[in-house]
Image (cartoon, rainbow, N blue to C red):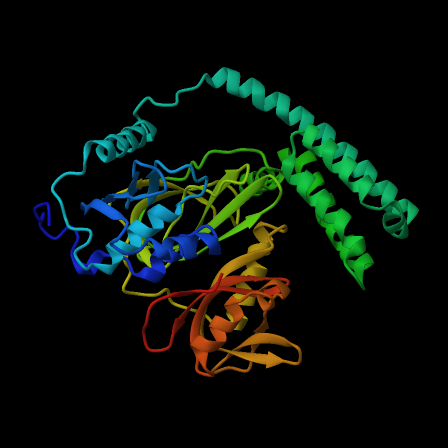
Length: 452
């Protein structure tokens, strides 16, 4: 098959499944196109190593596309003009590899064009390690920049406090009459003040008057949270450091992931994207099988591009994570990865719906602006509640309503089909709006089923 086998590096046990590959697709169109390329026909010179897969895919031009995947990332490189990560060629190559029918044989070395890109990734990763000397900056210049930004944020927070006071003095009805323009202008002022977190919250305030019945109460609640965030910044010198760090994070001020690197076998619980006109944000939830901690990875894609970091749900990473500062924060930075993602062979332990709600309440003490917390619900059954749906404990008299967003997604029907009236394990986000299921496992064992 054009190459020698190297030990156990591509044995059946470490190959991903087709579902895990397709979960990496940035959209439905990519999944469909990648599925068509997951056969041997368009591919030549395909091969795999312990940490990479490569191949040439015939396209519309005279030269085939060069496609290579770093399994440890995973990361992707293709000579096609697509702006998606992974592109359809990378998805097709991974599907062909996952099929394990001999079309992607184990080889001793990748070709030069693949090795060059892989070697470059290894060098860049080495430069980012502590003590490597890479990315050194002038600390005094950084301090001056931080001071100038803090002054602008303080001016913006003070101005926003005055605008909130004017709104409450004039009555909430004025917010409906003024329309969205007033809020957008205020948000632009917060952008000028270099407080993107405040700008985002102001835009959310502007959308509330058009959100239907009960909007005055919702607007008042959200104004109170914005006021609390403003005051947290203006009085930050009186706050304990974890809460002060949370305030900085909520304002959108950058801070390094300064927690000590924590190596673990991290199970990929869920991954999903949210997008606006300028930015796509990808959220990946991980569970440490030894530490029993749940961490959140964020990655971004600007200008219509999908974020490059893409992790297959249901697999586990042998990697280091470093936590970001702040009380009640789950976010971490992905550090060194020691092996390609491999089948997890386990699932995280769960709690009851009542315990999940209690955990959210506890988390609000450290972060009052927290929308939700990650939670694994064990032995729950999706049941109707009038025109809505909820997850009910199979062995307790309690339940959690699903959020409006969850009720409108196709994942709800996958969850119902997986359950069939029997208990399932569900991972998702639990907050004041309800529970959003993201991944589920069938009772008695079985692979993770993404719901988002």
